[in-house]
Amino acid sequence: MTRNLKITARKADRKNCRVFGSVKYLNSEVDARILNLSATGAALEMKTPLHAASGSKVRIEAENLGLIEGIIRWKHNGRVGIQFDVNSNARAQISSYFRFFHKEIRPVLAVRQLRVNTNGDRPLHLATLPLKS
Image (cartoon, rainbow, N blue to C red; front, top):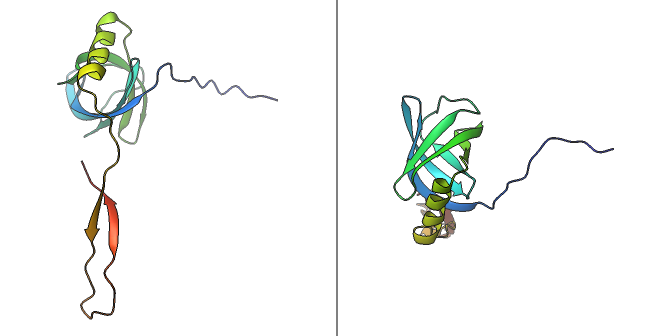
């Protein structure tokens, strides 16, 4: 017995990135950060809520990408998945971003010392904490 959950796989591999820009829907504009990007779509983290439903047409504007139009495919906890309109201009812009601007993003850990207890009976410990970007 098999179940068809109607789940579709991604058509293109996504690469993690940190590109800041904005998302425009009708007359509203929300600041966003592009978390990952592919030739066909992107996942974005919104600074404030975007009042648009799945299937709505939006425009993404970022310095390194330019202006790209797409459709909202999913929304969850302040994040939005967008599928780009399939046209040669969008593909050229994404290709240009990966060729000239993209840098591999990896988590960065910093080592910092925790405070020592004032009575002196506790040893000094080191902790690794992720840096906020």
